[in-house]
Structures are given as C-alpha cells and as structure tokens.
Amino acid sequence: MNVEVSKVGHASAVEEGHSYWRAILPLAIVAAIALSPAPAGLALYAWYYFAIFAGVIGALVVVIAFFGPTGILTLGTGRLWRRLDGWRWRDPIQRGLAPVSVGLLVAGSISLAKGALVGRASVLIAGVVFLLLIRTRINPAVRVLCGAVAGLFAFGAP
Image (cartoon, rainbow, N blue to C red; front, side, top):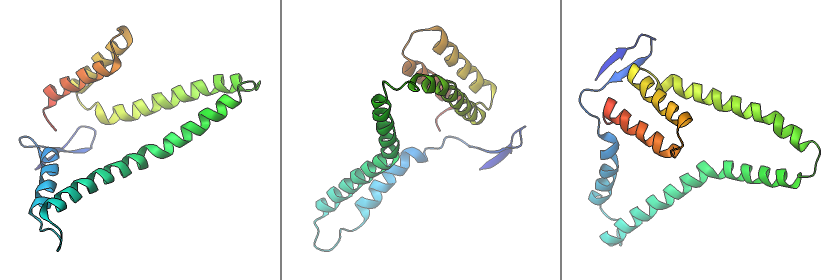
C-alpha cells in the first residue's frame, strides 16, 4: 500500500483497487465459527445457534453501553426541566443556553468538516447538500443520503 502526504502534511493511505475488508470480515467470522469444532458434548447445529445468540447478545450490550448513559441523562434532565415549569429562572436559563448549544453544534460541525472536506469533490458535495438543507423542504435524511450516494460515486466504495 502506498502512502501519500497531502499538502497539509497529513499522511493518508492510497488504496490500490478497492478495499472490501469491511464486507468480508463478517463472512470471515462466520466461516471461522463454522470451521471451528463444536465443544465436546455439543451438537454442531447447537454450536451455530450459540454463536448467533452470542453475537446478538453482544450487539445488544454494545447498543445499551453506547446509548444508555446519554439516554438516562437526557431522561433525568427532561423530567427535572418539566418539574421546574413554574420557576421564574427557567425561561432566562433556557434563552441563555440556546446560544451555547448552537455554538457547540457549530464547533462539532467544523471539527467534522476538517476531517471530511479534503478535496474539491467533497467540498462541492457538502456545499450542495448544505444548500439543499437550507433552501428546500425535502426530508433532511433524504438529502444526506443523496450526498452519501454522490460521495460513493465520486470516491468509490470504502
């Protein structure tokens, strides 16, 4: 694999051909499970079912670990905020936090854009999607999906 240094000084890998490891990796895991012998006293079909069950349980644990803390924090904050409905400081705090949340959103967008907008094609795709987000009333998910498809055609499969 060749390594190219861009004008900014960051090293990026240049792929020769297409990289299909993301599609092949789950198949390789299933093949490894299928080729590994079942533990003593366990039928082969039971071993397959156990492997699938373990994968599903692992996926559920990851989803709970990823979204659980944020969900609990949001639920608690929402309930507290609803309970403070008649409090006289609630509206000024809410109006004061609005610019903070917009600033955090813009800072996160800039941080993501620094890593994603690396060439003319990516800047053009992002600009067109941004203009569509501002000027039209089409569902934002459809516009982002169209941008992803345009990026797939512009840059190829990952």
